[in-house]
Image (tube, helix red, strand yellow):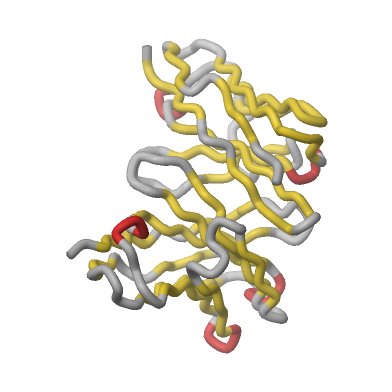
Length: 119
Length: 110
């Protein structure tokens, strides 16, 4: 069974750093892209970026380029999303999702990680 | 950058009725890379349709997708109580590689 299990909810202050994780299991981790999707409170889905763990090829949405860093450790089948300096506007639910190679659709999703940034 | 515009924003229908959701792209999209997702409150999105018209594993046949070029449609033939949710279309473009979501259509109980 394919599973993406994300790390737990976080409460941070503006200016702090953060790294959240997404652990994949039940499939070949290095053969599928893993993307990150933001959902701000009461809003829609926004694609942030994506990584191919097989060779660490990483692509970012222009809206998020330079704002976050996506990485992966294939030895522990885990992808990461990190911020160096959080802002209140980063408060959102963040989902990871695996994308198949052929249709590039997000077939499987993590349960989401809620990040709250507040002073 | 391709923009996906979904309409209507909200669809108010009764169980048993037919729902027709639209997704329009700002330029032509390959059908291979057009998908639909369902999201219920407090849950992660779930893949419904990929390749514009192919149901994902376990998706009931009351859900169907169609369209090509810039106009795509998700149809729910007879709404069940569990179908009231928000639906998003999504496309992948290769130059440069980018994934884009529409803003969503909420299907609510009338």
